[in-house]
Each structure stands twice: as C-alpha cells, then as structure tokens.
Length: 374
Image (cartoon, rainbow, N blue to C red; front, side, top):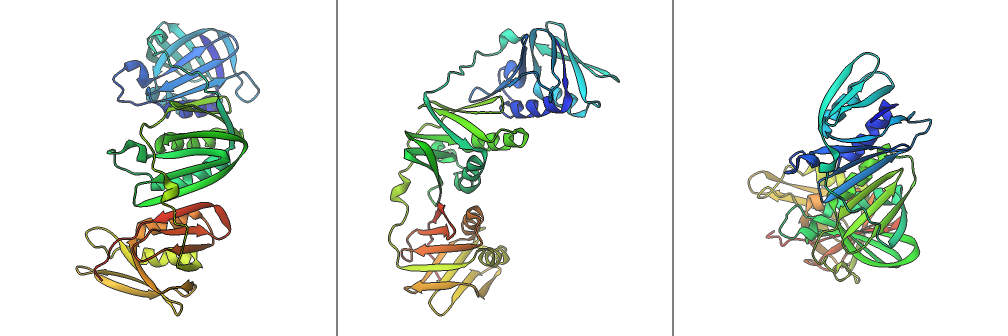
C-alpha cells in the first residue's frame, strides 16, 4: 500500500469517518479506521457496530490522490487524525512498511504508526434498503435543529431519545418528544412513501455535522425497518434504528383552541431569560397571565424572590387564563421555530398548548403546562 494525497482533503474525510468510532470499544479493530487502498480508490471505514461510516475517495484535482500500490490496514483513529491535522505541507505520503506498520511522511518528517491487520475488521453489512427518498442538506439541518432539543435524555424508553421519521404519502413528519414537550417538522417529498422509523439523535447530529465538509446539496436516504442510510459526497452514513413504538403524536397536538397569543419572539425569550435565576426546586417555572388588556410574565421562588413583567408587544384574543410552564421548554421551542414572531394557541389552563411561527407552518411545538400553587 502506497499513495500520496492532499492533507486537508484527507483530514476532512477522516474527521467524518471518526465520528462513528468509540474509543472504548471492546473490539480493538473498532477503535480504529480501516484504510483500504485499491487501484482506483481509497475506502475509509469507521464503526461502533451501531453507527457505521464509509467514505470513498476517488482521484481528482482537489484531493491530488496518486495510488501506487494497493493494500489495507487498521489504524487507531485518534493518533491518525492527530498526525494528519498537524502535519505541514499540502501533500502527505502513506506507505505500508509491513502488515502492521504505517509510514506517514512529508518533506520535513516521518511518523510511524502501529496498526492492526485489516482482516480482523468486522464484516459490516452495507446492503442498500429499497425505500429511497431525497432531502436537501438544508432540510436535514432544519429537521435536526427544530426537533432534536425535545428528545428525552433518559434511557428508560430508548425510542424517545430519537427523532421519528414518518412518511405518509408525499409528506414526511419528523417528531421528537420527552412526553413533556413535542417538536414536529413537516417536509414535502417529491414521491409518495410509507414508513415509520426512529433514528437516534446522535446519529442525525453526526450526519448534519458532516455537512460542514461536504459540497453536495442533496442527500440520498434509504430506509427499512432495521436501519437508515445517508449518501452524500462519496460518504455512506449508516445507523441502526431505535427499537420501540414511537408515540402517536397526532393525538398529542391540540386542534381546538380557546385563546390566541402573539408577540415578538425575542421579547418573550428575553423576558423569560431575565428570570432564569428565579427557580423552584432547581426548575425555572414561568407563569403567563393572559387577558385582552395585558399579558404578564411572572416568576416566584420563596427562597430567591419573584418578578412581574408586562409584555409590551403581545396581542391576545379569547378567554382569560393563566398558564404555568417550564421556562426552558418555552425558550427552546421559540428559538427552534426561528421566526421574528411567535404564536401560542391555548386549549385550557392545564392542557397542552401549541407554539408556531406565523410565517412558517412547517414546524410546530407543543408544551405541557404544570400545576401551579400560586
């Protein structure tokens, strides 16, 4: 195995592949990146057995890849990345000295890394599922940014730690919930599809982060009832799906309302943030007292103090009510909606309420209020 390649290009590819690697893997081979050099391409593979990433490098002007001889080796990812990132000069040279020793060099210096023979690497199943659709990088970034914050952080129901992708006809519904709040993003598909899967929040985060090193706009996605695959810019990202039945969120989303609130989104976020230090049992609870005359935001803690503020930009119609909820849940939802204004639709004092961006109906948030003693 012997080749030369552009250092920055290889560094970007290694960074993507390394996101699938766990340094604490019980299998030594899975702590490393498998480098397979063929006569016309290089294949880099990383995996923790649940998430697998494979990136193929074909010679072109950008990567300046020149392959002299074929071969393969597994090298521990953290050491390989450290060397490639910090070496000077645009071009670096790789040569397999023997079956387990890799030489990495440039015009000024040489490194030798001990590796593992490639035949010890697990045989990963990269079969391509039949269910296929295409999303843009922007779509996937929006899905992640507008839903992932609502995933559960507890492992007692693993399916709630992920983001649910449900296709019904030409619409893709992407949802996350921890049972106290819900975030849903709706995307239009060019073709009719029918599936219901849940992908881990970490997996989608890794995919979105990899877009920083990608120039391709569209992402090919393949799914079945066991795994999901993302193809972009010569990279295959594969993740096992989360087991369990995701809640029927359509039953959670309110449909009938008794009152409507609308205000400048940043004014509400800043007002909630100003009271963040006023907590009760370490939880930041805020109380919205709503009437057609004025909207007041209140907080209270017997140990710390209280606050009372009028929201000057708020517009309100409907029945008078007072609702208490988790302040963080409110600000997370408003920030995820990303609009200049926010609309809150109420169904009752202790009933879930809906938050939307009046200028964009593709996303909605639901927050469950809490019982207040005030």
